[in-house]
Length: 277
Image 1 (tube, rainbow, N blue to C red):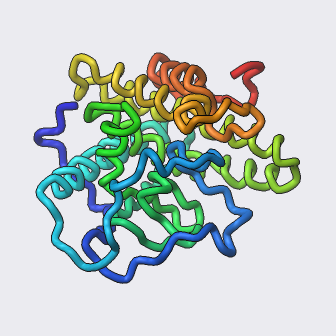
Image 2: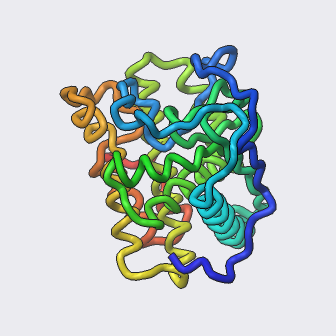
């Protein structure tokens, strides 16, 4: 992805290198709130993928690699601000209010509960912030098999897409429906929500097409495959259990990202009225 000359977003909250991180032990009082992650809230043990990838929450120096990842994240976030800032007035009829991206090391806190590298990047609707331990990029490439800078950019775009859903009022509607539903039904709703976020990430990718290099779209599609529920469950040594899926299969995630990329429009991402996923 060609980011030279692209501005850095001012909507960054940098908590890296700080002490005082909290231990991660669940969602606490926000247990009923939908927490939206790139692919780790799937009810499986992903520790084998993450061993050694997170950092202590004590004060420490930030490495040059982390600085590069932070700059990359800030520039990608800036592209999402530009894209959705143009799309919202045209397709939604309102202005777009961008989210804040919290960069942290090891562990941190959020209104939706504890955040750590083991949870993966996620979006918290309560404070309208996305949370990212930049060490996850190494996990994505080295342990999950999703290499390339555009794979990392897709991760950020996916979490921003959840903010887009929040701006559209979709998250409140889905969260209310999930609380009335059985566990299996709630999971099915979450799958549709996550696939819509993949599609919206594809819409963003279409609108930054001029920044793409050969192979970038393939990197994003591969990332979508690598974090499908079925693939993650197999990689954790389990037989895939569709009723437990919360993000969709590899095929579904890849397909909906491609749909968004091909159309470039929010209207192509109505996963909730799709007869099949």
